[in-house]
Amino acid sequence: MDEIRNAFTESLVRIPMTLADSGAITNMLDEGVAQPFLVTTSVITLASEIVHSILEIDDIVNVFY
Image (cartoon, rainbow, N blue to C red; front, side):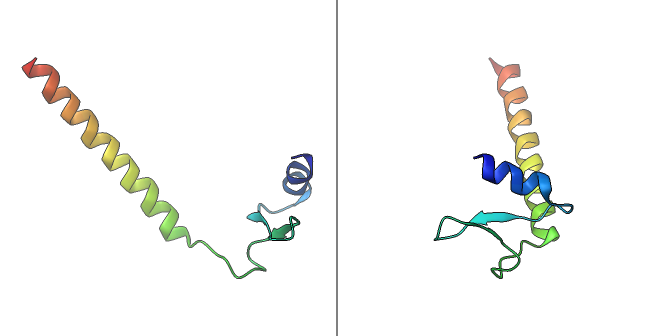
């Protein structure tokens, strides 16, 4: 765990890292894995919309009971 923490702390730029099959910490971009910014923002937007819907349903249920 210390090795992972040090890898993130020592990097000047926050680069996604993963534990490869060998158990070594590798840069995900070097492995060809990239997560587009649009995907991340879409997931956060969708999650907040779901929470908003759940809270609205909860308010409706509380009014009737």
